[in-house]
Amino acid sequence: MINLDEVREVLRQNVYDPEIGINVVDLGLIYDLQEPEEGTLYVKMTMTTPGCPAHDSITEAVEWAAAQVFGVADVKVDVVWDPPWSPEMMSEEARQQLYW
Amino acid sequence: MERAVPMGGPGGVVTSQSPPFTVPMRYMLLGMAGFVLFGIDLAVQSFHLGAGGAFLPAVVALTHLLTLGSLLSFIMGAVYQLATVAFLIPIASERGARWNFWLYLVAVTGLIVSMGLWSGPGLMFFGTLATVSLYVYAIVIIVSVSRSKVRGPMLWFVISAHVYLMIAILAAWLMIAGIAGVAPGLGNVYEQLLGTHILLAVGGFFTFLVMGFSFKLLPMFTLSHGFPTWRQKWTFGLAHAAVCLIFLGIWLHAGTAPGAGGVPSGGASHGGLSAIGSALEGIGGIAGVAAFGSQLFDIRDIFRKRLRKKTEPPMRAVVVAAVGGIVGVLLVLLQLAVRHGQDGWQAVVTFYLLGWVVLTLMGYAYKIVPFLIWTERYSAKAGRSPASGAGGSPGASRGSAAGAAAGARRNAAARGAADAGVDAGAKRERIPVIADLIQLERARPVLYGFAAGVVVLAASSAVEFGIGAVVGSLVITVCILWFVWQLGRVVDPKRVAKELSGRD
Image 1: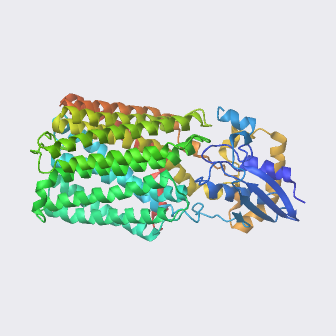
Image 2 (image 1 turned 60 degrees about the vertical axis):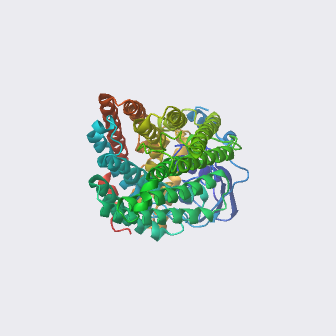
Image 3 (image 1 turned 120 degrees about the horizontal axis):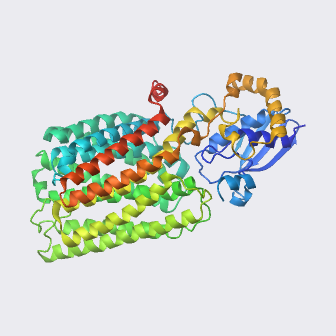
């Protein structure tokens, strides 16, 4: 059984948008975390913009970071564009960091 | 998009679209080296610039040291990288892009030396090589982006830019053929070829490329969402109208002008065709002002919708440069009205090229180069240890949760490392974010100093104020060296040399 809260916290601590300097969780890029079958983690996420140059870097980082959580044997990352990312998805801390 | 297994590895994440790091980086490094040489040579030649020496061989070589040796080289590297990002396509011929670098290096080096010596055979030989090399580049990019499913003004701008580049190069090659005696009849239209070359290279290629990619880069770097885009097609249409009308105007002067030795010819009031040509040039100039005005409204809207409210100096410089662009076109109109001869055109082209094209590229370079370096050196490690931003960023100070997560990482570290063949010790390395590689606030004096130097140099050139031209040039030189030093610290020449060696 994967502790999804722990996954979220690991992503918050480890995976940053390198250009913006804010982690993917506070940026609101992680839409959903599920464990569809034992040991398999499904991550539904997005990017701040289609064609983000850090796209591959961030998805690789999410895969690696999530794979470090106890109980995770396999990670599937699904990058979606619907719904599109919007600033309202950011946490209060992220908004403050962007002076928004 | 779906992946099941963490990939990555040494040398950065290689995506399915992006070319290998060595392709864009070689061109960019050549561009930065060329920029240093240009800065030094500018200081040396500054006495000529204040004395109307635009057509001296040394000054022609200096100009092309900037355009070919620095700008085009840097742009080729950036476009090979950005095209894959902006249009979501791979480069049509990565091998062609890679080997074309060496052809370009030889061709441009020989061509610039030949210009300085004003050697006809040298100009012909290396000019032909440069033409081949630039056509290879333009065709690779046009073929690449034409395959993209991303449609719209950005694509139109990029394709148009490269078509203009090819015509500008053809004009240059024809001029060289005339100079070298291969096609002596072309001497009759030398001024028109020169005007076409400058117009299509500076107003066509550089301007269209910068405008087109700005529609992608500015929102990306300011994190802007929800801005209107309907005006972009108007900007595109007006910019084309400007270039085409001025082009027609230049050629309607053929055979009627007495030969003032400037860019679009002075003394054009003789004859009906020449009068029409002058009118078209004027209307074209107005269309150019409207194009830049439209672009400025777009930039305003992008900035209004930006999420990064604290705007970084390089992005401010891009805005200043866009204002410089519209001022540059207004100066073209003024020059057409007062016909201030060669000095006037020298000042206008200097201001437009340095104040709009170069300043914009310097602003973007502060963002693009560190990103490329980060991707090469750190992206493969991202997600495997805390990012350095974790110390002061959202989510960083959640003590107990962080401790739990760290524990979980420790539990899985051995498995993760074994699976990936990664040294577990690397997991404890703190991964920088891009902001850790370069302090962008330090770009402010460089960029604004550069802009001030451009104003002083251009104004001094217009009135042949020698001391002013020297002072302006020296300020520009200092800022260029400062700029390259700042980016050089990010690149780390020794390290990048190792990264580039043996990877082609």
